[in-house]
Image 1 (cartoon, rainbow, N blue to C red):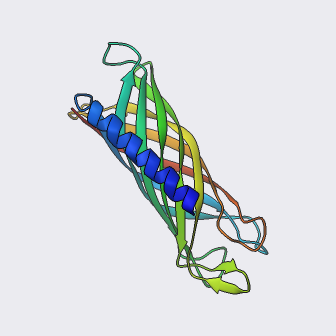
Image 2: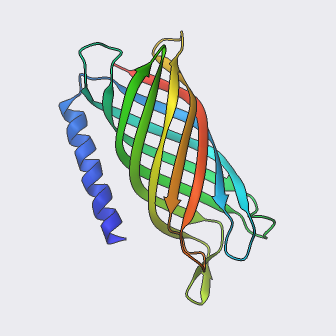
Length: 196
């Protein structure tokens, strides 16, 4: 937990410094609907769906060409909350809140933009059951790694674009009485606002 806190502090400081040094450059904010497929707990079969909302803020750090529509490196802070009322018929559900930070590389493709990103942070599971030793706890926190990308298409509305799809693989390490790790697939779509 201490390593995660140090990692988050260093990342936030780096993003704040880069943002302060690049105030003249535009930033973006995205809000999207999120659908996630998560691992079932030990002793249960298959996977289960979760739904929720996600959003991110991106600070543009470096443009690889002087043109407006060119490759771009950004620092990203991403927050998501997904919920399932029941985990494969169990009498408990699960709420996952994930906060992650890292770089994003964005490049133009025809009339749209494609991006890839690699984020690190933590996830907090609540309203569920997590085996810790011989006891069950209703919440737990773990490291999270988030790898993914997406496609955005500019809209006619002023400074907005449609995030057609964002697909991510998220790895978490919440206690589950087995391997203590989960592989999650998350898909999202939403609106991005561009600030100048």
